[in-house]
Image (tube, rainbow, N blue to C red; front, side, top):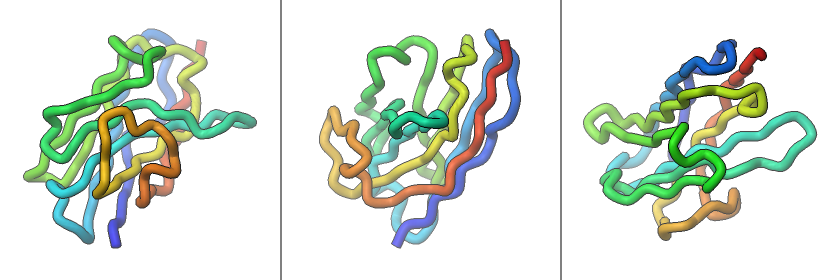
Length: 125
C-alpha cells in the first residue's frame, strides 16, 4: 500500500506562486510514477502533470504547460508541483496520485491506483 500526503496549499493572489509537495510512504518511491490532478467545485477531476519514476519523463496538461512544473526528489520520497502565474481558475483541490504501471500520456484518474487526500489552493483576483 502507498500513502500520499499533500501539503503547501493555501490562499494566493493572482499572479503569485505556490509549491505543492506530496510525501509518499509504504513503497519504494523510485518504483512509482507520480501525478497531480485537481478538482474544482462542480467539475470533474482534471489531470495536471505527471512524471515517471526517475523524473526524466514528464507530461503536462496542454493548458498548463509553461506555468506549472512537476519535479521529484527520490531521496526525500517527495514529488512537487511548482505553480507560477496563478489565476483564479486554478482554484481547486489538488491531489497527488501514484501508479507503478505508468505510460507516457497517462492522464485519466483511473490510471492511478493511489491517491492523497488533497490540498486546497485558492487564488484570489
